[in-house]
Amino acid sequence: MSIITFINEKGGVGKTSVCFNIAWELSKRGRKILMIDMDGQKANLSFFAGVNKDSEISTMLDVFKKNIEIKSAVKNLKENLDIVPADSGVANLDMSAKVSKFRKELETVRASYDFIFIDVNPAPGWGHYLSLSISDYAVVVMLPDIASLEGNKGILETIEEIQETNNSQLKILGIVFNKNNNRTVLAKQVADVAKKISVQHQTKIFETKIRNSVSMSENLISHQGITDYAPSSAVAEDLRNLTDEILDGVK
Image (cartoon, rainbow, N blue to C red; front, side):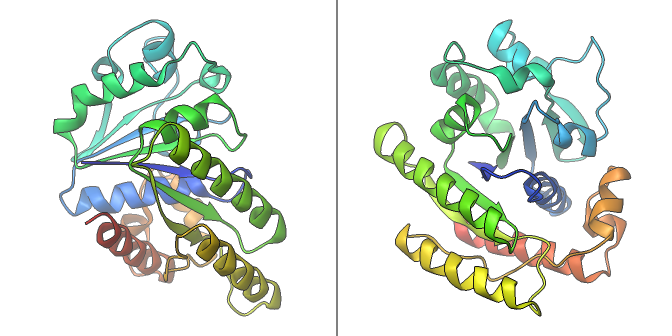
């Protein structure tokens, strides 16, 4: 079982969409997936999954603050796909939320899943530290623009710091370009710079770049993965190819 955190320090790059769609595709392939929503600012992963917020739903905040077992916060979405949802309070986690607690709770469900995917909020904070400290891999999602490139540099440095201080097993699985358009000069320039940065940090750019597509917004509103919502689309092909690369990377 592998734990993968999807991350960047810039909002709006579509990391939650990538996380959700890869999890969906893996579940279609018979892998059992648990998604954990640690982005309390928007809780987009929970929304994409179709989880309605109400007082009866337990979240990651309850796991940390009310000491409930993570098993009791797991919601089933479909065959092979579960989620632990978020609420706004998760964005305010502080040092009272312990890495040891998170690791211990995940150990109780580890045997039930092939992958655990964690989606974190963009702003650097304790949620990043918690998630990266217990993860096996990080996937950095970025756009082909300058602002995303700056966020990319910041998170790679954060990952290296956690590797040195708290989680020597953590690996950067790769950097994926989202909403990509290879025909623009800017996209090519950003890709060149990102490749140099990836070499410096001993990681790689995924061969698959996810193309910009209206379908990638529509499928999330429908609470479906793109490979079911628009299976013959170019972007669905991208997500299938990226899924293959991720599986190859964790072997």
